[in-house]
Length: 237
Ligand code: APR
Image (cartoon, rainbow, N blue to C red):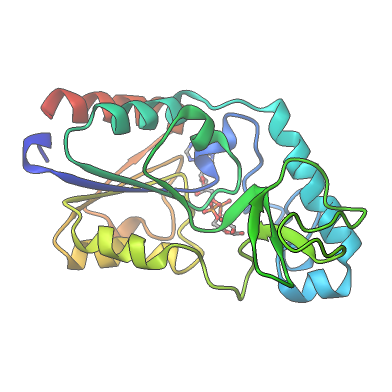
């Protein structure tokens, strides 16, 4: 599809775009996520049952962000946003800050962010860089022992859904990058975009659960596929 026919782009990214930066994906073949079952660290029930385990797990992942850098795929998407003449929205399922560090003005983190804390008492979400273990006070209400990672866990409502659905309804092109298509509502975005008349493209290491729903799929590492696709888009813009 030629760039000249496309004005509005919506991009969805998942863990695969950060894999080559050294951030582990969720659904490795052993079914474990950094030696934990996802249910033991990524549900409100798990947090109630064992807050120390959950806080420690996310504290370690937050600290790990200091050891990783955006890769060529993150940088290519930042370039696309900066140079694209039409509308652009990047929706990420990732809780890392690699898209942010690559540089975006039109980015939403639908599953929250490692670098933010949410107060379970006053509901304020604030930037947070250090550990949450040790019950630091909420910067908004001052209460101690009420902060949790600002991460959307299984069973919770993803963020920014109104903005995302509005953008999908107006999209000419929907591109899904590095996601297994296993988790809704993100896995349903391709159908919403198709229904709205958008062309749909998957860029993933391998065929995903959602591949049959896309008009077009390209398979390979994001650090190769994404810069090549961005070149195509900007050349046709
Ligand atoms: N380049 C492109 N794709 C890759 C690469 C790579 N270098 N490495 C892995 N992938 C692909 C995998 O083939 C897989 O299809 O990225 C996908 C990662 O899938 P998941 O681990 O399931 O991650 P994701 O789709 O982001 O998970 C969705 O699940 O646990 C929740 O909330 C969590 O946001 C997460 C959501």
